[in-house]
Image (cartoon, rainbow, N blue to C red; front, side, top):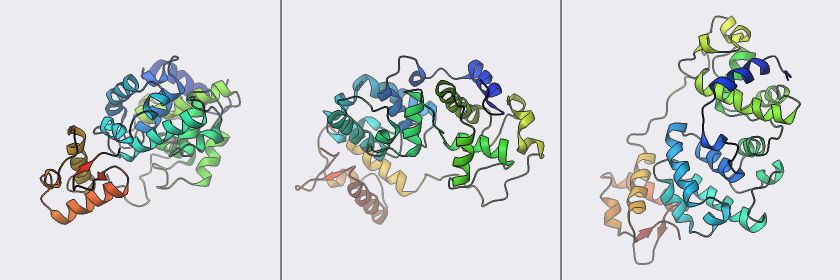
Amino acid sequence: MSDNPYSTAVLAWYETNARDLPWRSIDASPWAVLVSEIMLQQTPVVRVLSAWQAWMERWPTPADLAKEASGEAVRMWNRLGYPQRALRLHACAVAITEEHGGEVPSDHATLLALPGVGSYTAAAVASFAFGQRHAVLDTNVRRVLARAETGIEHPPKTQTKGEVALAESLVPELPSVAARWAVAVMELGALVCTARSPKCADCPIADQCAWRLAGKPAHDGPPRRGQTYAGTDRQVRGRLLAVLREAEHPVPKDALDAVWDERIQRERALDGLVSDGLVDPLEDGRYALPG
């Protein structure tokens, strides 16, 4: 089973420590996996769980979502953040329904051609939904490999060709084991090899980790600043969208004006929402989620 120096230990650790997440269930459909992967981008599991459950109850298949207006996807997205992901999921549902008979395609290249599906998501769905052999390289995996193999605390800010080559070199040969490795090393990064407080005492590959063996040298690259939210255009956009989500009908402009005092920032945020296709300005001066 062991195709790389870490797989036996990491896979054994995963068997005992993996979280019981609904999209990992043997009964989870490829659509359920695709929805989870798009929701989990830049959003922690604890926030995604209830949103994913509600989404799958309402739209258990791509065709169910494709029948609805894209604005309903934005409404259902609620406060998950980065709501353009809702539009991408709706566009995916339409493409899957119209071009693939309502079934999420299993082919990696075909997945990659779906609207809003990038290299990570295509590899993740191919691996987790279809048991294929791909390097699945998210933030957690990049951090584990940076520490274990490269001996640095954090990976580069932008993914490099070297990281991709390293990840691909570590993928086990047997597809079923490769798919298990992909989720196992990701879970290790999420639960143990965390960004701020790694639990090295609990790590199954601590005795092989180049970073730990080097004495855990501090990050010497550009400062890693956490994202701020309060007072940003993102916060204003969120408040504007909240008004539209909660309204059963289009709303007048003054209902939007009431959510933020700073006019220039408010108008900039609203213009951005319109430009991104998240808000429709109507001819009568009111605003609505996209139809």
